[in-house]
Image 1 (cartoon, rainbow, N blue to C red):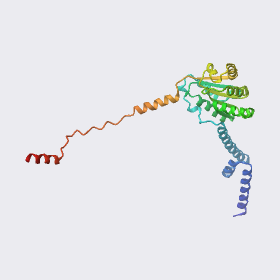
Image 2 (cartoon, rainbow, N blue to C red):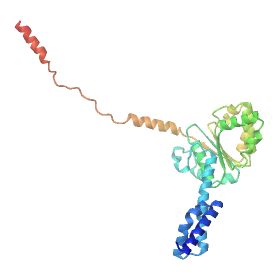
Image 3 (cartoon, rainbow, N blue to C red):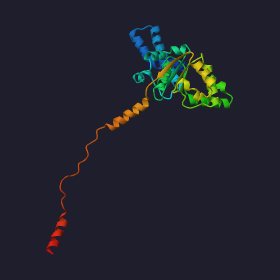
Image 4 (tube, one colour):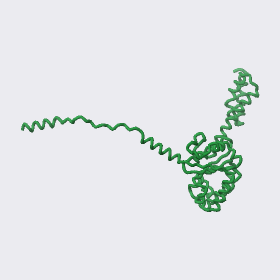
Length: 290
């Protein structure tokens, strides 16, 4: 090995050590090839450095995006490109696409999605959350019953404020399936406290199967329900899902497919005359001779 090669090898080892300590794994992987390409193309040191930094920044953004999606705790990953707008004619597609750009989050607005079970509310709420994560925003997905139970446990342990403070650093909270299970009096009060704390501080997306007039059936207290709706609907966009259940429709389609599958023709019985056993004939002949 020549002196020049020895020097280059030592420099490469030092660079690798520095990049590891600086936590720049993308540059560590890509700089040898980019350096060769820069020398061959006669690029300036600044162009070489810019190419390195662009790769590092791009990879870090991918990693941050994966982390945000993981921290959002979506039960199933859903995106807008798989949502069937044609199946929910009551939705304004342009309004939904505008929401996906995240302007409502910057304005601290809420979104209420109202409709029957299986009409795509959770899918669309998740898709808006995924879009927000991709835009660099912090999101959390939680079921309404799960949230109420967490708050009730915290209330019993005198740490409600600690739980609520865990939501203060978020840009968007998605509360799914509000209305399926009635809340206790204390649970309703704690949920009211949660939504009141979020009011004009961060965006909330709520999915519910109940029209607003029926919210008293799950919150119990009429005055509390009225106060809650007043806050939720003040800076709010409401999406109505008027269609039959996606899941029911798909189930019916599967059943229809099974019943219309052509069946093979039934096996026809053998129509040839039955031949009598020879032994029986011999026996009958012997009886005649006797």
